[in-house]
Amino acid sequence: MKQEKVFAQLEQKGVSRRDFLKFCSFVSATMGLAPSMTPKVAEALTAPQRPPVVWLSFSECTGCPESLLRTTYPWIDELLLEIISLDYSETVMAASGQAAEDALHATVKKHPGKFICVVDGAIPTAENGVYGMINGKTMIEIAKEICPKALANICIGTCSSFGGVAAAKPNPTGAKDLESALGPALTTPVVKIPGCPPNGINLVATIVNFLLFGKLPDLDAKKRPLFAYGKTIHDTCPRRSHYEMGEFVTEFGSKEAALGYCLFQLGCKGPETYNNCAIVKWNDGTSWPVQAGHPCIGCSEPDFWDKMSPFYKSL
Ligand code: FSX
Figure 1 (cartoon, rainbow, N blue to C red):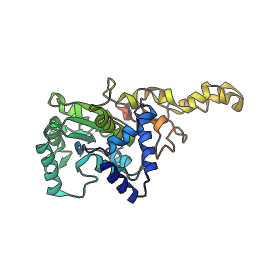
Figure 2 (spheres, rainbow, N blue to C red):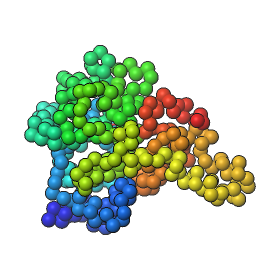
Figure 3 (cartoon, rainbow, N blue to C red):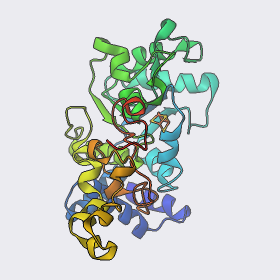
Figure 4 (cartoon, rainbow, N blue to C red):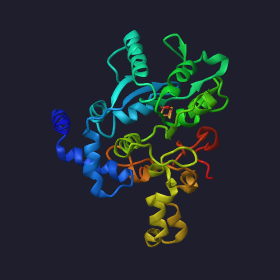
């Protein structure tokens, strides 16, 4: 019944069942599941359960929610609002001011230990956090109040995962990632989906994992889902595999000339960057930076702004 309602809503937006199932198969493939799991993913996305979600935005550029909501699937906001109960998000909610604040606190009060908290942006900690305030409270106060009460915290983007651009040297605001800012006060699980911006499909797949299996996905040592961050950009880069297969040696005349097709010497940080960009790509699987001819800048790694720059200098 619920599935029919979702289909009807999506159809009003010009999204057919076929489009939806194609999306489910994409999510399923992103998670590394067999194609036979696609109907299960569709069921999970349209099932009646609605884990309440609050989305806290701290010190950031809003590229993270924009990358999720405005590009790959223009109807994904509808789907997300339908499958999860997104009770608070400054970027997408219609309410503002006190009404928005009330929605946040009502969810936390009503569902202690049961809501998912999505966090984007780093948290300023210098001068008691005065460099980042919302509704008269510092961001660090808000994070301390909300995040430890969540079932789990999903850090979306490099800023909330590792500090990101906000924490780059000289970091005058003392910006820190969520875990470092809260320290031992944060006792609830944390999942990190880094990238500046991150690919929205990895957030959807993390939520689907929870809906399907009742748990968060398996993580690596840096708390990133293995399905998305288990291999480096270099491991899965088509430029590298074409080169290694010798495809371009004939075309370019020599192995050295063929090496020019790989962007390593232009500063590509693919060998040290874990992400699935080469597999899932962006804009409905259209392309990604390395395919478009730009070296990877390592935006999903800790301290990328300081450690991966100059971006055009090879490793
Ligand atoms: Fe950071 Fe996100 Fe980069 Fe921007 O919310 S990961 S600066 S894309 O916006 O936090």
